[in-house]
Amino acid sequence: MNIIPNPLAIGTITGNANGVCNSTKNYSVVNQVGITFNWTVPSGATLLSGQGTNAVSVSYSNSYNSGNIVVTATNSCGNSTSASKTIKGKPAIPTTITGPTSACFNGQNISYSCSNSTGATSYTWTIPAGASLVSGQGTNSIVLNFASTVGNVLALKVKASNACGVSANKTRNITMLSCPRLSNDEKSDIVLFPNPAKDELTMSWFTDADEDLLVTCIDILGQQLMSKNYERSEVEAGIKINTSNFSNGVYFIRVVQGDLVRTRRFVVKH
Image 1: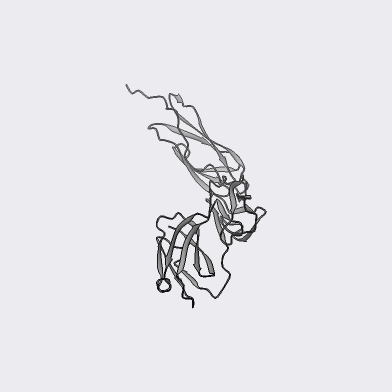
Image 2: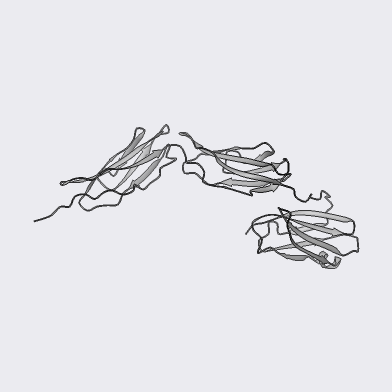
């Protein structure tokens, strides 16, 4: 005598839940021997293949909005309870915005990017007052210039979109800091390389003055990370600054030689 077990309860339906507009996606549940799986799809979606099995392929129109995929397991002894998954045509909100949470109040060419949202065809950034867009609108990576007031907190926002809709905004707050004023003398004395640096930065200084130099490294919060006196000949030959323990971000080199003061910015990117 063969004993046929009742279908087991169906677990999670795996597959894309967001950003499915105008695409084909695959969905599945854990298989059960001797079981038939009955799938239904929402309006605006078409079941292409897999009916009766534990895995299906579903096509979505370019006007698809939202609905539920439902699956039930059956055999001659009965049906299991149904499992359901809500599927949205528009992309999900970007999960992260990467980039500095603090920046110089007059910072230039600062990069930000958001995580990719499945199915997104474009990204819309809301640029706060006190910042201006250099490039990148419509993509998931932008470059900003700042012209704000020290202490201000700016809210940078981004949302993902496709033909079926637009996600909610992801927000990143950026605090404006007072940073060393960069030298604008284009005849420059300071040479930094590589920039961005990884584990080591080389700095050279060329000048006609004979005095020794004080070289200071400062982070974006104004904290002094190193300060050391050098003879002119040492710096002309190129001094090495260990950046292996620096976090990714923006830093400043300040050189003082007599009455002459110069500041240059560099980036650490591991």
